[in-house]
Length: 201
Image (cartoon, rainbow, N blue to C red):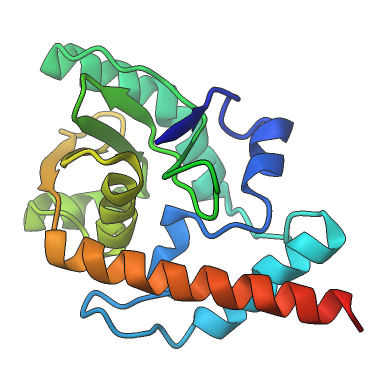
């Protein structure tokens, strides 16, 4: 694993991730059953566009998303208080020197744990607390982080001020991670070939 220490959401952080599939979007490459996602082609075009222009694609950030970013440090502090774990903040992780795809956990704990923090809207937080398990929307991201970092556990911590946090220990799904790696290899190969083709026009 290669770790970049550039602060998350800094200019350099965005540059390092430009044109590369990231774990937060792996659901657009492969389904939970291991089949190709119907969104893969659109995501492919988005990333090749970033490579050609050298600019990040415009992505919408709602007020709730911006609020979630603002609450992240508060959530991390609460996680440390509850668990007694010390969190090391990092920038971006890559599986190897090729840096074809990446993940940005919200922290690393010890030698084998990734931390993933979510600060969602109140109704969503309540629903997830009632269900008391990892939301399906976070499955790809958590498994992708483990694939890239080589770690076997993700601590999923969902936080909303004044509400009991949702804390789920997510273990590595070896079967899914193998399928994800295969899908990423194909996707990145297609991405490289499409970039080469478009640059030759």
